[in-house]
Image 1: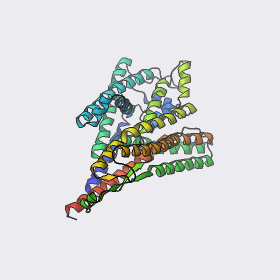
Image 2: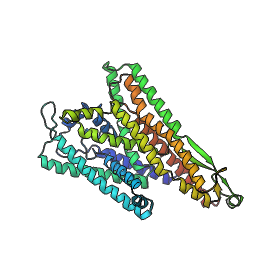
Image 3: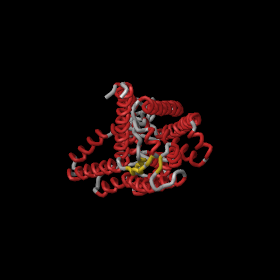
Image 4: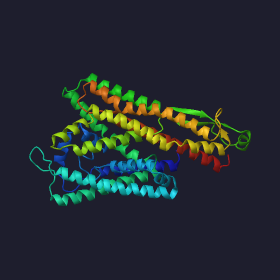
Length: 420
């Protein structure tokens, strides 16, 4: 392993460690015991899901309680606007325009973070513990200002950490932050399961059943994520002679899941937002809506399936550009056997990608919901969804691929340096 790769891995681990430290920095003026007591009693609803994605930062009401979700929400809004308005889509494709595009996302993140932080602060004002203690120990107006500034600072720090990991480390920084948050909650989940078994609330066979579901889910994810359709490509004799000392790829790999983990993250962000806001409401109609949107409800998982499928098609249409691939092939003297270059090649690739995306979207939707259905049928007394497993496995695979690609790049540069 090269020194450069080791440095990138150490930088990534260092920033993840910093992220975990921030999870233990509470917002000033909060009675943490009251907040934790409240989250312990709401572990099976939307608040429990939000807490899991934040690595238990929410139950501590740390400065990163809102996590990276405001940034993801802003990204969703911008992606939808870019697909709707051609001028914004063109800005995203240009180098200078991309900087402006990212700047707009950052400003939108600030607005969303301030709105959510003020909403959380107001909601905490009515929260009391079993002993009648309030969740806020200082003046309400002062607390709103302090918490808004603290949470905004925390979210901005997470954005910066994510960007630093992407630029200087290994993998996608935002995905790795979510990955680290979910993984950090695994020890407490294992401990909670052991307590349930010891208390007689869950038998050992149920635990084995959960392990089987997890292993089957992981196996299905790995199998599909490594699957791809290799479209054969031929090159003219002249091109092959010019590149006889270089490796020329003779196929176009098209993954079954072109959109990666993004659909699951987007769908979770959208569904958790209204469910979190409505949680704790005293209005009977809002309470009913909150129950329908609880992660342990069939309605939530139905919407999860539909949103995941939608975002899988939406994001795949953005990431896979058949026209660019067709134009590049034409310039390089390559063609797909039996398909005319140019527009026909573009249509052929779009057709292949659409068929793969259909099955990829169904797979993502199924992995996000089916494990919950199985575990619920087993009578497990806590929420378990496939989204967390999907994110963890996909991010792990993506990170390993980038490490492997970095190793190949370093080997190629070493061979080039010695003149081989």
